[in-house]
Image (tube, rainbow, N blue to C red):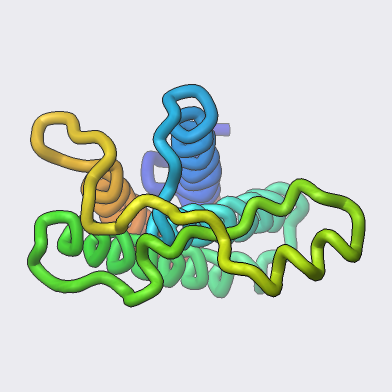
Length: 176
């Protein structure tokens, strides 16, 4: 079976691979490269986890055949990539000092490694470790930070997803 370039199935599969790759890269930068994430970086990861889940569900809907779910899932995926583009663009703007980041930036998060419920409860009562500030880009390539690249990649995925939604809305053809 020949799959057209903007087939929603192909775009959803690509979206799952790219979001998964971005998450893997972010975790490698953190664990291997020693670049701890700021609060906005963590927020961007959450968006890609959601995108990965929706894209995987969309692929399953195409493979297993529940046709009514395909359109809403692709629209939801486009919405997630819109949110990802805006959030990453906001973070890049914070890094370039175009605007201020959230007040919680630099406050960090808690490292929850204890399994003891008493230790967990006491750790929640104290301030977490100081995290990196959101306005400082930990890494740049060709002038763009990881947030900048995330914004560009998310915008490209948003465009592809919207184009594939257009294919779903077009009159039915045998190749969809």
